[in-house]
Every structure is written in C-alpha cells, then in structure tokens.
Image (tube, rainbow over all chains, first blue to last red; front, side):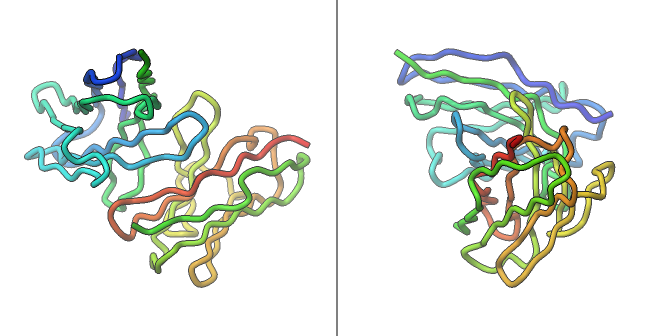
Amino acid sequence: QVQLVQSRAEVRKPGASVKVSCKTSGYIFANYGVTWLRQAPGQGLEYMGKITGDKGFTNYAQTLQGRVTMTIDTSTTTAYMELQNLRSDDTAVYYCARVELSRVYEYWGQGTLVIVSS
Amino acid sequence: DTQMTQSPSSLSAFVGDRVTITCRASHGIRDSLAWYQQKPGEAPKLLLFAASRLQSGVPSRFSGSVSGTDYALTISSLQPEDFATYFCQQYYSSPPTFGQGTKVEIK
C-alpha cells in the first residue's frame, strides 16, 4: 500500500533552517511527483511547491521563492523540503502528499510540526 | 492566484441533519475542485474530486454540486464520524489553493 512517512517534529530559532523528509513506499517513485503543503495553527492549507519523482524538477510557490528547496533521493524514494531563514510565522504542520494525475492529493504523510521560536 | 472563499467557517448540527458547505472561486475553475475532510491531528482525507466525483471508499451520503463558480459539499445525513473540518481545493490553475475550512461541530 502507498505510504508517505515524514520525519519527526522540529524546533528552530528564527533565522535557522529546517529540513523535513518524506519517505515513500508502495508505488513507483519516478511515476509521481511529491507536493509540500503547510498548515499554520488554526489555518487553512498553503501550497509550498512540488517536485517530480523522476528528474527532480521543481515548482515553488512564489511567496517562498529563495527560501525553500525541494529535493529527492531516488535510491531511497525519499523527498525532502528545506526551508531557510525561518520566521515565527513559519510555525506550522508541514505535509507531503503524492501528486496524482488528476492533481488532487489522495495520499498524505502524517505531518511534521515545525515550531519557530526564540 | 485563484481565491477560494469558503462558508460558513463553522456550523453546529445534530446527527442526522443535512449539511451544506460552499466554496466560491474568484475565477473559473472548470469544476477542478476537490473536497477534503480533516480530523484533529490527522492529515486531510480526499472525499470528492472533479466537483462531484466520489473518491473510492467514501460514503454516498457525501455529494458535490456546482452552480457557476459556486461549489457545494452536502452531507445528506450527518453521522458522528463526520464531525470534522472540511476544505475545498481548486486545482485548475497554479498554484492550487484551498478554502479556509468549515468546522462541523455537534449541536
């Protein structure tokens, strides 16, 4: 069965970086992209960007350009999202999800809480 | 970006009630709309896509409809396990955008 398992919660100080992993299994990694979304406390979902599973082509949300980097490791079928120069308003639960052909999100990771606090 | 305006932000209802949640798109999205259910501490679960197509395994009491740029999610008879937050998402244009959510609570 398709599974996406994310790394554990992180606490960072403002200005630091965080890298979240998303280990996938149960499908052909190269056939699907992975998207990253985040959800601030009590808020809706925000699209951060996506990365293809074959060549690692990326598309980032304009609001995060220059601070976010998404990568893949095809040998371990793992996707990564790194966010730099963290601010307090980056505090959120970060999700990875498989990008379906229909462009909706059927399979999700369990979420990773990132807290940015001095 | 296409803005998705979802209403209401919260509602209270009894088990067995019929409940409707709506999303309005700021631009045409050609029925490229999905609905998700999210329970506390969990990832969202896909309920419907293409405005009205039920995801496999989702109970038939959930349905979707469209009128122009207004999209609706209806739960025909609310069950105890349906108390959750519901989000809409448009995927017609990039970036995909989400409504702010509707929290459905027990009355």
